[in-house]
Length: 386
Ligand SMILES: [Zn+2]
Image (tube, rainbow, N blue to C red; front, side):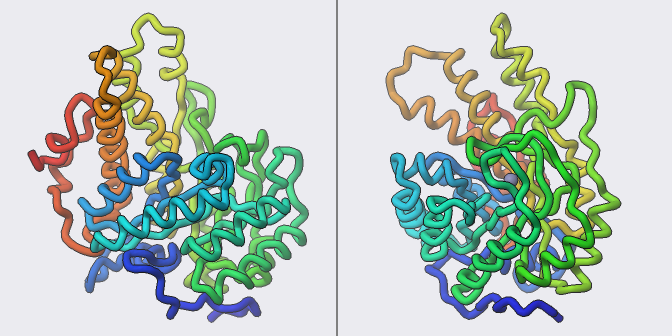
């Protein structure tokens, strides 16, 4: 039972067809619920989308796999969708996704990633998202300018304000405690990292009432998660300690791993092969991701949402490099668009299968065991639907 005095999430809110709060989808993942069956725990990857093609890719992947989906938008993504106006961006992407989602038989959450409830302009975006999206992250752990960590009491107070606004509307709220190193985009970067402190966690959860939490346990944003040749080590022991503590407060509190991208060796190899003689080839060789076995360990322990972005971006760029190298004289934009969009769809399908998120709303339309992730082939061949 929750001992928090914060408003409970309104689970009777009717979202437009095909949409749901991230929390409701993640709760099923944590409990291993697929359709009417209860099986093994799985996680839902949250995909950060920055283009309409990426939205198309993600929704196609959810549809093919019968998976729950989380589409995450950062402030800067909303700004670019809206031609400089993030509020317009919110309306545009929501209208677009609503039209798509009502044609599907899966449930999708539209989530604000790293929402800033500190600056006036950030607050306006969070408020606009509260009216259209189905889930919000209230990241008040840093000042979003890479200058300082926010004092705990400010983080709590601001996050609680978002919970007070969002829970009655049925939107889930994800809070962040601790500072995550790395760079996600221009609005979210930090040079240093501090682990989440268990004592602070208890106070944070009770006073904010958030049902989703991003703790810092050693994951990092961005493509360079360490020195080449060294492995990223997550603090698994701390994760277990934090999960146990949260569970004792409210078993419906769900954990989120940020910076959970794992490099796809086949994508890096594809880019490296196509970049012979180019200066950027070495940069591709130097990318360091988190090993999947570490992320799998987090999922097993109870992390339900894994934020993945870098490997999907890398897949896009690798596919574009390949398409241009093969033939850069085609003047039909759709030729390159198809290559990149299909590659990103493959990337999403692969991550959903890795996380176990398939067959949730209906049986997968493709054979997940035969799916072949390969940027050298088209989507129909990769999915065995040709
Ligand atoms: Zn993040």
